[in-house]
Length: 533
Image (cartoon, rainbow, N blue to C red; front, side, top):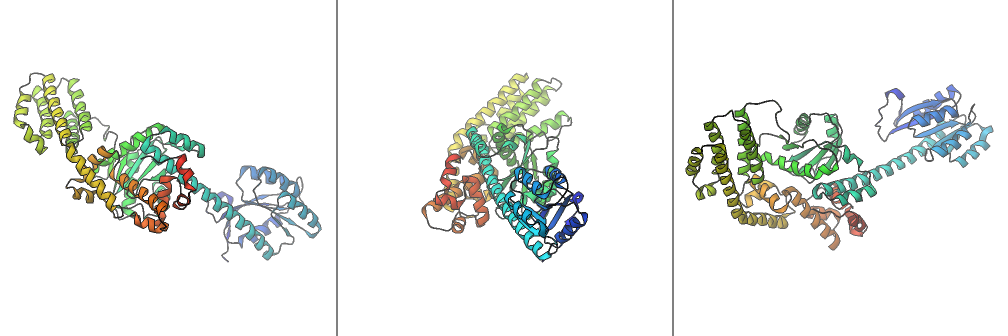
């Protein structure tokens, strides 16, 4: 037997392990309490000891401290062990109680059993009898703790199921259903989110407690939600915090401990659960930056620099954004960044006409970097038109005209993109059991990873990682319902070799374990919270 130890109350950490017990010893004789403490020190495990000299003191301790079990004498002043047991049973019905009594008190000890006393030990205490009694109490406590952990784990799966459904759907009915089962109030306390993306299938093979490991490294708490084999998102509650620094620290931890390559996207600050779907979309959009800045690993949706900068630097940053927008054929973002330029020069007359023409001619030149578009329109002609303008209104009109022509050109070419997206989807349907990466899929249709990512989400409404997960989960459901394959075989068949991760992922997606779903007990779970992608 491994000898345990008695831990002083002042030195205890509140987040204890399952091998830690908080014990209240109640006896009016100090020497008797010392004897019990000595015997406990011989038992396996760690014990936080609290002491009381009578029943009244014991009740005060129970009302101020979390106690796992009570060891008490029968005969004590002010309030004896029987009265103490009666009051404890009223206030703490599940607290295990062990009574110590002499032979002359045997009848009292038997009476104490009516108050739910777990066991009694005759004095003088025999070490073997004490060991057996404490073993019974600890076994019951471990059973209770195990049941509680299982219940908490089940609640956590449901919370992840409802949260992920809400993130992608924005459906308020999901919140209503979640509120009927769970306390989702924590969602209101979140103020920032960080999306982690790996270059390979990573999250299906990490330890189940990776969130705890990251919390220890960051020295701060968060809610962890796995999205798929390549992505997870963390939600933080701290209001006053530089989350760009947190993300950089998080990246350093991941880089140091794991061999994969990671990119992180930091959301803007937000308030309330209503913002969560938009925040999720924003994180996915921000993560797209990795295609254009592969050497950067942390991206932020907030303004990258709050310090004042000169006009040339501002223009350089905006032109860099506009160039990226054109590269990924994102007209929405292009118009947004173009408007930033327009507002700047509409409201500031300090710049020379030549400099303003130079700035907006750069926008037109970026548009003509698209080879097929440049074949339809002549760059030199458009630049010459712009430089012949006599006022800002004319300059903006010509630039906007070219942007509109570019948008129409993209609409004409979108039919090809739809074909490419359809080809990628068909490939996923046929090869979902394989390790599919964005790079592999982009090669199949001869596109850059960044452009495929952009057009796929625009066409389907979800990113590739999420689409692959949806296909795998739908196929897993089909196999569970229409075949006799074991869960491990289903997991392998749908491209998730790690059975433990597959079961967690399935439960987070459908709100029911694979076994329950197959037996039909998951049918109710699905109906109470259908997963809409």
